[in-house]
Amino acid sequence: MLHSVPDIDNSAALTERQQAVLDAALRLLVEEGDHLTMTAVARRASCSKETLYKWFGDRDGLLTATVQWQASKVRVASVDGKGLDLASLTASLERFASDWLKVISSDTSIALNRVAVGHAGSGKDNLGAVVLENGRFALAKRLKPVLEAGRQAGLLEFGDAEMAFRTFFGLVGRDVQIRLLLGDRLELTEATIGGDAVRATQQFLALFGAKNGPQGF
Image (cartoon, rainbow, N blue to C red; front, top):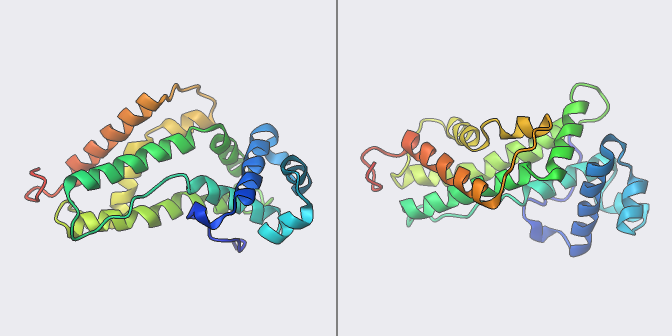
């Protein structure tokens, strides 16, 4: 069962102080990995353990919040289905792709995912489920409405939104995340990420763009 923590898909739900605490927790994950403790986070963030327990409940709650905080950095622009056109849909998909690549290639996300993979099936905690629920699954819930809006506007054709999302996710991520987790030092510059985001979006539109729709595919 996932721990109940504040819904922070929208970063505005966090105070600056809470954001600073979660950033401190993420830095500690990079440095210490599996050895993250509430005491260490309180010390690094210059706050009391009582405050951490009040905000996040316990260590699992804190880890859940850090995952949500990372995921909130992947922006999904809201779209108006009635006025949606190819340009705005493309821009939304490209921004999502670019943000996601930046997040998964950061030292903090790599460290967090390594710990989660190491714990998966070990019985230590439910961090693997936390990462899935508040990372990949949460991102799907946020992007699917954009894909649905594209279908309703006659810009996209697909039978199942989950399948369409998984295809887009795969086109964006390719083998990048697994290579980073295994220690490959990929050079993901702003230009590289931007180019990959554009390429993945165009590939997705080539697959799912409405053949007789307004975009002229």
